[in-house]
Image 1: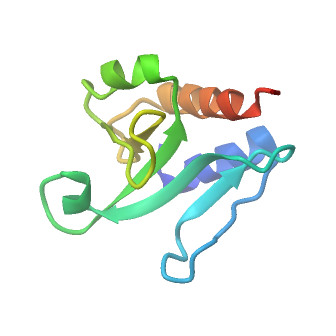
Image 2: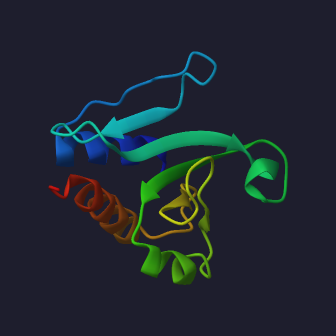
Length: 120
């Protein structure tokens, strides 16, 4: 999945709009649960070196909340990175460059939504 297909999927699947919260990063898109307003996904483009990736330029990523039990094993796979600018214990970054299969990305978005939607 690429950046736009992730954005379109989230809007369609969860019925929530993207929010652009930062003037300095107008392309960063935040998605919140409609009921409790908690973030469950952030789509960003980040300098490759800040992500520990080779090469120059920027990479599109998706940050999602994840069960801490899965984070370690996911990060052993190509396309998964420590969460950029979020808690590395509870969030994970996914490259949106075709490395991670579409079904895995969709499953992670659903998991993220479920994790933040739990009623207390």
